[in-house]
Image (cartoon, rainbow, N blue to C red):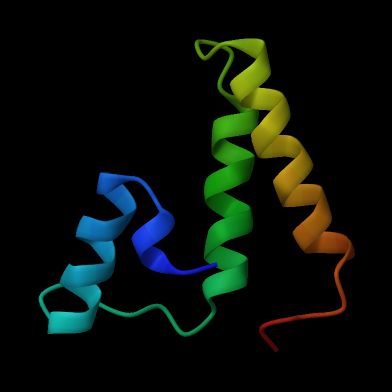
Length: 68
């Protein structure tokens, strides 16, 4: 997936990281799973949003890629 196909919020973060204004996280998969887990566990959010986050986090956890 190319960053240009992502939402404005993601493109802004990408630009900040690329420019050095925001720190790069070497263990990006772990950071993504943590963020998705937080979204999935937030009962204030709509159920469909939480389900999407849970599905994405579970797929990352099952994938053979790891940050070790």
